[in-house]
Image (tube, rainbow, N blue to C red; front, side):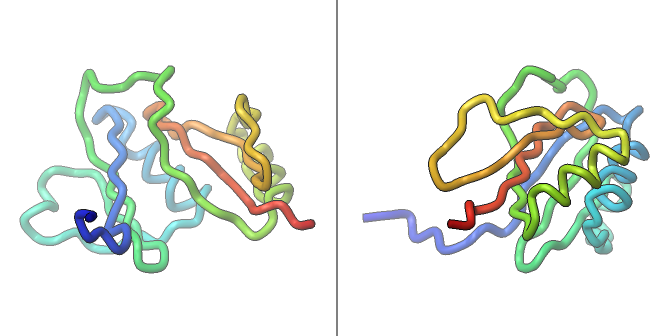
Amino acid sequence: MSAGIVNFDHVNVTVPRALEQAAKDFYSAKLGLEEVPKPQASRGRGGAWYQLGSVQLHLSLADGLNEESSTRHVCFMVEDLYRAQEYLASAAIEILPDPRPVPGIERFYVRDPGGNLIEITQKKLD
């Protein structure tokens, strides 16, 4: 028996209010996610919503919740891991090496301006 979950709808990350613009720049300009309009009822709260395929990333704002040592994360799959790493490093984003390698997966991590951990991965090509 299961709960019947069939897909992701969205992932939510939270950053302090003072880092809202830096986080928006990170997700749109640096990661290249497409910002989509939030529902009218949610617009007054700040933040942003991004669409990637059928899944959305919701950027929320809250103060006092950031834990830079947290391992909670969002994972993005890329076509070319080395190209993604070079691009992010050239955008002055610190590349965090994989502390726990998994067979069949290549990955590295970055943190957004609010401290949220972002995993960047590619299946190993044999």
